[in-house]
Image (cartoon, helix red, strand yellow):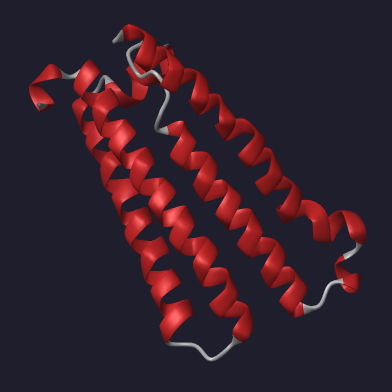
Length: 145
């Protein structure tokens, strides 16, 4: 069984190429000159950036969470800070999905409609991150189970 967890941990390293691709799409308009991009081209770029960021965050949740770190001790070791962190991520997920729903169903602008798909994928990736953080908190604070 330990081999299976190790395989998933190595698969989680796929997060880095996806996050680098997301960074590329975020900065491409700056590198090529923002004046050369139309609004729809910007929307396509940022939609792709959000998509790759969401996929990268999904791969993040496959990582091995059993190792303790100093940063983890500061964030997850104290009950009050851990609770705030979980609330923060939960509110961020709600905000992302709210923006995605508004952009998809309540606007007639094609650029917003296009970016909504990326927002949905980012929200799904954030849900994986929330689940991973809850698992990490359980390893630091057994009474949370």
